[in-house]
Length: 278
Image 1 (cartoon, rainbow, N blue to C red):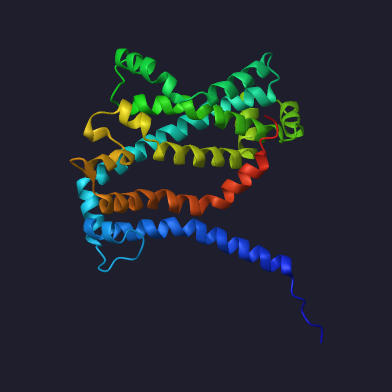
Image 2 (image 1 turned 60 degrees about the vertical axis):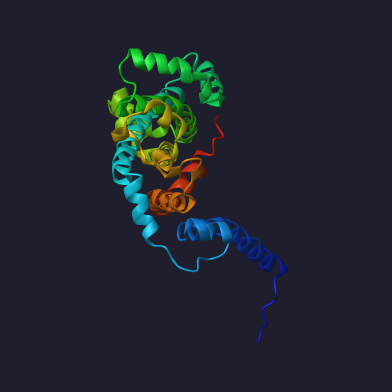
């Protein structure tokens, strides 16, 4: 009978993976413990499990921060942002990857430079421009800003994905009489859907968690997204940290479910794009 040999490399691999899992779950566990304590117990025992589980913190956080309204606004913002970014990035990436347009290299450099600039540089000009356009303190105004800041990365990623698609499919369609729009809609887009799914997921996560622009360009409570609800737990010069933890877990839940459901597609899209054409 042949004995199985101990593979030290496999054992080391499992050890490293176990440490990574513990490193990832440790902060979440402490975060969950914090959400289930009282403010006084959190000060006495910040790291350990609670002595009495305060499940009512979740209900109190939900009502205090008006998270129901925040979730609706965040859903509108995320859907509008993802739809706009997919449309803008899809058209731009197709033009740069498949149409051999003059000056495409300059546009590529512009996107790289523009995407690397900090958004804080544009806050003041955007504030005055959005006020004159009467879209300040509206969901549409915030969504338009998100289109601008998330489209460059999505365009570069989608362009890399489209560069990997063989041109034989397009040439066969053109021989059959297909025009450019038909080639885009019926040939390139169906082959690029993993790339679109990847940019949709990354854009949705970024728009859902964005905070700075949301508190700058939204002032009315009925339009605030859920990411700004943490301001509701301020008590004088201190914060109610158990309620902040409970609200954070409630905010985390929807995107965690979406990411876990689509993680394989997300990794496949990133791997297929490779970003090697940038």
